[in-house]
Length: 504
Image: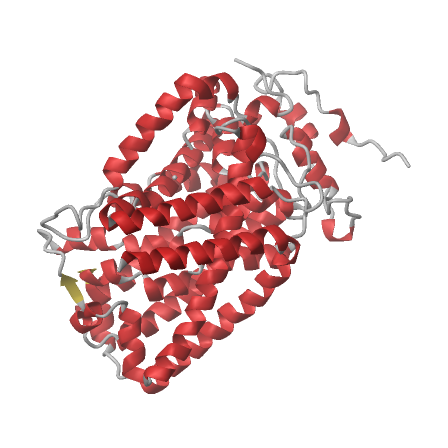
């Protein structure tokens, strides 16, 4: 049976992307206003909107779209894991800022990052592809910079063995359990909420507590030795920043989410709001229970000290099982998201051995080679920790910095296009509309990128120095060299496959 043609089937692909009039572009990319929940899905779970989006981007639907709205939100919520991060990664905030500094830095960070997430959500609706940031940069940057910018878009042995074991388990989950992942994510969403309730109820009932004045007003500290409390607070906000990132992970699953142009941006925003709310409630609870900041910092993790004030050793183990399970689930999601972005970049010839990495297993309908590559890289990085934890920390310090630069570059490119060529922006079903420019500006000028390079304390040495600045420059030099030696000959950027693109 032949599918009836629509206006989506007659997009004038031969016409230059920048030459199309606003009316032509709108007619080519607009979609009928109806709920996709009632429409039939294709063999791979794609809707008519998905097929139109994939064709506009010049992509072939290779992966099965197993994710629906709830599982997409669950995936993103579990991966971001805000309250779990606030439980296990607040040391820097407690050292540089203290109780009051940590709570208020979380408030302004959450508010500031809402502009970043709104900007990214809109781009995910315009271009719902696993490539995410590098694809958005390729499509929205000035034509002469599109290809280059999108290309640049990174006892100890006990821990190493644990990382290797977890990485192997994650590989099995994401290769042989991939089609069950939506159901698992929904289950973990329930654990995420129930675990949150369990911990805060236990702490409020059994722990000694600070006064509200100490938490919100007087609990400032500058144990990092900075020249002023203001500078200490800026350095310490990295704990809050770390808790607010990663909602964009849903975008990298776009090609496995049914009706991605509508569902992905909503999943990003809802996960950010849900996690942000849970995170604030948890952080307030947590800080009320840290009655001795110095003593808590002497423990392996401050949250272990907090648990000990409320329950016995068996209770500490029981409570700690909750974040451990959820962090493992988040790790599975991290690998899933990272492997899809790796696969997407390889599909566009942006990596060494791209043809092999970009292969999709025809039976499993997943990019098994890219899952293997990301798992092997994880294992290789963990081996560095055996020889030198300084070298290991230097490499992983790029985590937040590299993510921040992709956010800024993506938002900067769509802001440029929105100001100078607004008629070339395709219509989308989750749009910022008239608020696009101010929201993009607010998201672009976030100060998070600058503060990601600062060390925890001063004076610094090889151990406590933040090597992110050195590693950032090293990776930039390596990437530039690789691009000019080989990358520019094979990598054209995904924009060249986009319908209506005019090579310049």
